[in-house]
Length: 87
Image (cartoon, helix red, strand yellow):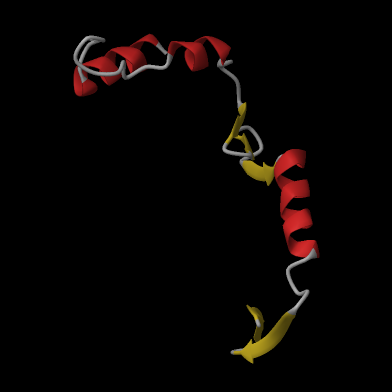
């Protein structure tokens, strides 16, 4: 972790808050846990099993969006796939 932080500051510049925003968000850094499993942007990444998956929050949001996707729309068939178009 220390080498990554040092490389970040070498590439993006050391902290000069009066000139620019700090390159490292310290609140996110201290919340971060070094582990084989990580949740980033609603995606659960597991480097031990080499798998990815959606978090429950992301999955429920997607199901909610898809539940009303076909309402008030026509289904068009192109290349064996269906698309919904709002009318």
